[in-house]
Each structure stands twice: as C-alpha cells, then as structure tokens.
Image 1 (cartoon, helix red, strand yellow):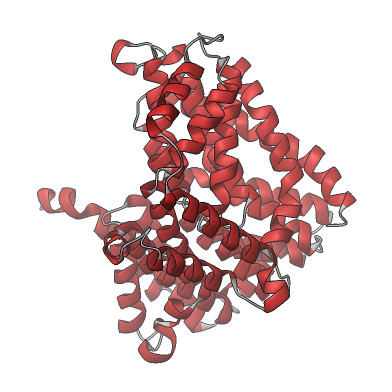
Image 2: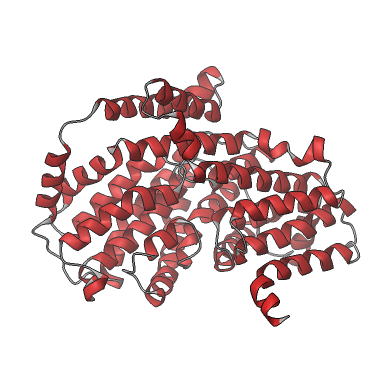
Length: 472
C-alpha cells in the first residue's frame, strides 16, 4: 500500500480534491454547473503543478472528467476549445519557431549583436537582450527562445570566455549572463502579444469584457515600461549579482569567427526574413485593414514556408511541442471559458469585492496585482497561473471601479513578469536553470529583488506612460 501511494500520490491528491469538492454542498449563490466545473478545474491546476503526467495528459483526463460527470456536453461544449483561435495561432507560430531555428537565422542574429556589443560583460548582456527583443515577436514560446536559441549561444560564449560550472567558474560571467537572459525573456514576453502563449489567452479575456487588444495596441501600452526594464535590468543585476569578469577580450572575436564560418545568408534565411516581415505587418495592421485575424496570419506564414520548402511537412508532424501545446491549451481555454459562462467568475468577483470594500479603486488594483504576482510561487506554469487566476482577479478590480484598460494591461504584464520568482515558474526557467550556472538560492533571492524592481518601474514609469497615452 505504501509503495502504491508513493508511486501514485501525485494522481491521488488531485483526484481526492476533486472528489471532495464535487460532493460538497454548492456555495450559496453559485450555479451548480459552475461549482462542478470548478471542482474539476482546481484539481487540474493542482495536477499541472504536481505533474504526474505532462500537461497534455492532465488535460485529457480533465476533459474526460467534464464529460463523464455531465458537467459539459461532449458534442456541443467539451470540444469547443479546439475551434478557438488562440490555440491555432499558437500552433502556427510554433512551426514558424521551428523554421527560425532550422534555418540558423536566430543564431546569426545573436552572434551579430555579440560582435557589435561584446567589449564588456555588461555590453554583451545588452547585446543578448537585443537579440531577445528581435526574436520575441515571432516566437510565441519563451521556452523555444530560451532553449532553442539563447541557451546554446549563452552557454557557448560563457565557456569560450572561461566560465563553466564544471570547474566552478560560473560566476566569472556565465551566471550573470544566464540570469539576465532569463529576465530579458520574461520582459519581452510581456512586451509583445505574440511572444508567449498566455498573452492570446489574456486577449480573449479582455475581449469578453469588451476591450479589444491588437498586436499594435498591446505593444503601444507595454513598450515604454518594458524598454525601461530592458535598459535598467542588466545594470541592476550588474551590481546585485555581479560577474567576476567585467572586461572581455574574446567575445567579439568569437562572434566574428562564428559568423565567418556561417558564411553569407542562405536562400532559406532570406525567405525567413521575408516571411517574418509579412507576418509582422499583418499582425500589426492586417486585422485593421483587411480583417485578417492574427491566427490566419500565422497560418499564412506556415503555408509560405511549406511551399518554399523551408519547412517540410515532416517538420510540422515532428513538432511535438506544438501539438502538445495545442492539445492542453485548447482544453484549458475551453474550461476557463465555461467557468465564466456558467457564472463562477461572477460569483468569485462578487465575494472578493465584498471582502475588500472600502479601499479606493487604484488601491484595489494594486492589491490585485500583488496577489496575482506573488501567487506564482505556487505554479509551475504561466498558463496554469493565468488560466486559474487572471479572469477572476481582473473581475475583482473592474468590479471595484478600477479603469478597465490599465487593469487588463497591468495584470497582463504581471502574467509574464511574475515567473521571475522561481526556477520552475515557466518553461524557460528550468531550461536555463538546468545549465547549472545559477544556484537555487541565488535564483530565488535575486528573483525576489527583481520583482521589487518590476513594481517600481511599472508604478513610476509605466504609470506615467499610461497616463500620457490615456490608458487611465
């Protein structure tokens, strides 16, 4: 029995939680179906945190639970997530990300910036940050950017310059560059609508409140405070988590040598550049000018790459991460949608609003952001965190009279930035943490300090910018 519990406790705990919640009396004022769906949704979030299976496996079991309990109708409700535009957009841009790595264009851009800005460790950090800024709009997975492009670049540069955890020299410069790259990854995720999977989810929630967010309007709102973060963060980390090597004499030569070995741009790289240009234009203005949905723009980009044979259909079939994400994202989007439609979010908002009556609307918004930010300690996924809490906390802020636009965007950037707190809070974190350049203690301690920096920048610079553009 002990062996069984030890082997399956990660399954047992969410199941027992769901079973108990399902049997409890429905809270006063909440629709029965809303409570039953919440009784499945909460254990799903817990299972995602405990990870007895990959997220896709957890999502399939949750879908089955919704159907078997009669909470959702199989034909008319349970599969609606697969027709949602959000998973399709994410799926298509995953394929774009594969092509980006396959053509080696990402590595070329990275080394190009190292060649220009690699005189010092601080300059190198800014060069790598610039690479993230260029990659982020086109790669909707922070894990793909971190693992597929930035990890090999940062690791190879660190080792070439004499910084390697194998000989206990990681603090020479590698630790600083790795943690700076992780933070830059989160900032760019917050900056661009198409930079991470949670942003389109937030876009859908905002639309349900009558607030339409386009690629351009998202960037317009986040650009100034996020650029401030990008400018200040490498400098702040330089003092609170300093590299031992500050002046470099080999980084630029390494980048120059690598670029020479790569040779001139290939035909496939030029096709990638042209395809990205088309997609970026359509993401920026296509919906406004021709009513072309961003998901359609993504499918167009994939089609171009297939026709030009930059991508083969085997590449599409073998992109397991894309199909896996499409599966669990579709199911989570569906569950989140029906939590709102069945009345759970409205009930939750009304009760939280009753608890915080008496505070001003802006104080309430600040409290909501703080709760949303630091609750990420409990989550090992941005999607799980956002799916579980974003809509409910937003509803509380709006119900208390906080300005809709600033509430939506303040919580939106928090969804990405809050992942800085732990080494497991988003898929990009374990990818970079696994290189062993940053210890757990350093990651958590420095991450907590950076969280204070986020609040300071967004309250001062973000608040000033949002007032200028009349976001509130």
